[in-house]
Length: 423
Ligand SMILES: [Zn+2]
Image (cartoon, rainbow, N blue to C red; front, side):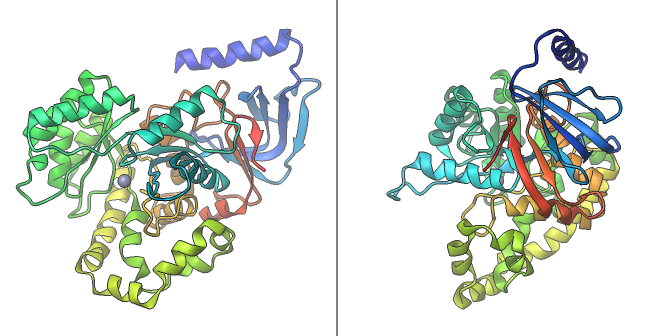
């Protein structure tokens, strides 16, 4: 932290002595929510130079360099670009469209909705690793969200197999390891011997590790074994104070993914959100939505025991989110969007924020979880997530104030990534 704020001061002092670069932009007059949880700045100024934020403050106290391009956003709200800590990219290998194009289209879709960073937690293999590397060498100019990847989601039947799987993903160059506890109750991956070996190996390889889990008991085992991130909600019972204390003491991040559980049953009928103009504006949703709304498809969901069972699990997830947030556990907004089953990349991140507020969190807490908080949990807060000097200029301009009503994130007017405005 000290290093970073030092960097910000350095950037400011450089501005004071160096001639102003042609690429300086100053946003003036907006309410500025900086993503840290601090009170918003009324009538604020955000200065961006060469794609990075160089100053944020009140109009009265923030110098605008001579020659800067001024963008008057009086009466609007500026917030950081949204960080989705648990998304997915997918591609159809049989499609005539190359995988790279399919993946890039999804990053552009996220970006159109103001999701400027996506942590893809798996099943996407080597193609997303290649795309991530490509985007790292070319700056984020093409209107795509920033991408971090886990590579394939891992499971194993023995500690040795688990370690080998982690090493293989590490060799791919992934940003994080993702494991999935699933299968019958006696599945080896559910035992501390197997997942513990994988957690240990990830840490040997200097990688953090996120786990797909469901129950409080699984969570306790994972946290005892040193897992870094819980990639879903605890959905079987109220999380107990001892487990809350351990999650907090170990600094484990928690990603609720409420919309993931919603998507399992919501297409048994026609959800309200499909007529929301913020949803219907997106062409990419039309075809897959039509398939989900077919009467036979809806009947299948209605008849599915698994779909019906997730309803009480979602209620439990909401309760546990409130308990964990109130206790001060680090919450990161994540959705599990990207499975081609009605988990809408872009729109669902906004619905997730709405559901988090409905679970009892304040809009400010939710906005932090979706920006600076998510970036902190994913350890990318030196790059993105907050509007502070030295960070990438990923920001959103909204027509209405999301602190007054979280659904005002739908009033998205402009998306900027690395100081460049999306068309
Ligand atoms: Zn997932």
